Image (cartoon, rainbow, N blue to C red; front, side):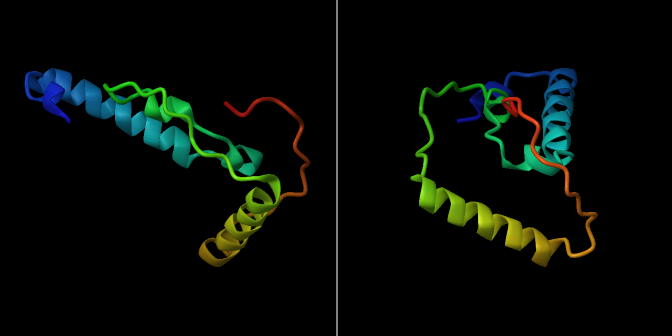
Length: 93
């Protein structure tokens, strides 16, 4: 699947690595309401393109998942700052 890397020079590999690291950092540094958004830009960094759309849960199932995700943040990041800022709009992408 990653044969495209085999023909790259060291410099090209480093450039690719930096691009991927920057994408991971941007995703890691997401905060507040942006944590909940779909991030197809990450997938666009892969050489193979896909027209596959993710399966989207029905609303009640989705909302239960959102609640569980937020609970996991309390468990995994108990000392993270909290905010009461409401979502202000935008597409998140």
